[in-house]
Length: 245
Image (cartoon, rainbow, N blue to C red):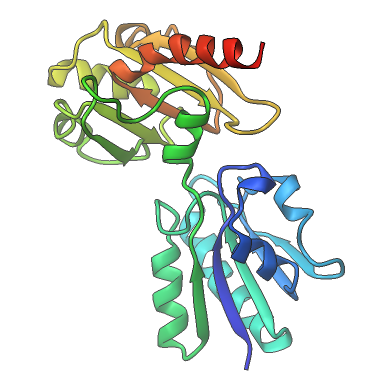
């Protein structure tokens, strides 16, 4: 019987894959991969394996999700090792748990392989630690892709030291406005990390006020971080440069 693996591809760089994920990719007969999975990671798939792109499109997500489920079963009938490859960790805003439950209910042999989430790794590697003694004692990871209840949703996070927002680039102006309306300061620092961990990484630093005015130009995919830890970036990068000088 085939085994289906739901695998986290990590934030982008292939050397940030887990050892287990790399081993499974080297044995795969078919790989269904999301849009954010990097070409560097896909290069680790066994030569000759089927590579099937299944990235979501706005307004067609449910239709494509149903197709993904059907494709996984179809591949499992033809291949002994099938991989559902998702960016970051499959259970953090990736519908991995839904796919896992669906396949188990249908009687398939499924294994989950966690991945390094971009929510923590991308800010940290860019010099923005989510926590820091005396500055931030906790953080929250939230989705910026919210259709309903925007003001009420963001009001929940007004007192969180560090707010890490995934999939928030498109709605960044509204997010910033709602956070300010909820009580966060317009002068609070914000950074956006585009294409984190890759050669195309770009970091944009601003404030909530700048973002609320629409003055911040940034493109997806990017991780948005709100909080005083953003101010640590210059200090930490100076220390890194001094250490390698």
